[in-house]
Image 1: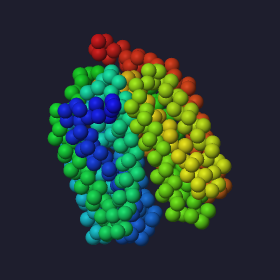
Image 2: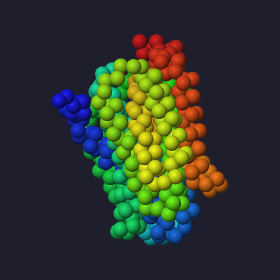
Image 3: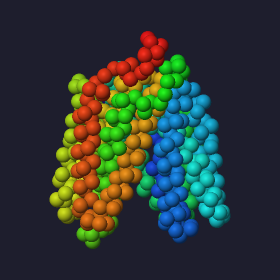
Image 4: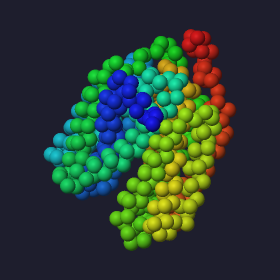
Length: 406
């Protein structure tokens, strides 16, 4: 029986860089919650733990696209090696500052510097694109990476908190730092699969976020990110209200399971329809499946509604990154992917904040109205952006760059 996932991993080096990338990106999920777990136990102040964690997360959200822009210009090794060294050293000093109770300013300073961590999801997708550009296998590779991203968020956060609680407060962050160091080292050492640097002048006219397709997709995925952050916050609130707080982890796990299963199926299919249309369909499904959440008033109903709500998340990401690959010039690809990843992260932060406010003021069940609103807005954004997403990449470049590309 034909296995499309087996096909992509037959390429020399693919197993190696994919495995290394999975390890290297675990800190994306482990570090923010690991900082909270570590500092809340050692300092006893949740506001401080949250503020230091937010410093890291927000700084990385701003810095990552800039680093990826340099990666497009100079190459993965030239940029990722020094930035990873800075990040690893900063995390190590943060661990020491926590353990030895150094002044509070050292916590914020090291969290700020640790945000130099490069975007591994963008770099690994750039490698797959280099191998399978304009081939159907690229859709399968992107599906695999979308599933890997979700597995990282599921496993990473749980592992970080579990280690900190079971062993010692710094254990989660120590593991996260080691994963970053060894994972990135293994990834960078595999030079044969590193994308070649395109002509620098093709990326010299500005940032990828100035391209209309990147703007449309990033804006749409800000609201998609809000949907699953809202689902997590509301699920925790509802299960607590129902007197079954321990059921929250099961409900959230079911949410990811639905997305993983459908994502793998979509990745195995060679869909012929235009990707902008498939993205609109996927987001329409995301929006529609938020409605059952409004009436899920028991744990079994909530788990079922959450499962259904998650089925189109991975397909949405697969189509979004596929469109970025097609609509962004090769010389800007890593930065373009990173902006979309940043949009998801911003959406998660905004969704968690807004949903928390709604839950506090209007009750746990009403938190899901944030998901409904976000799904509707995301669909409208993609619907209005269909013409832009159907265009050619060169349409978004200045005339001189388009001529240079030819």
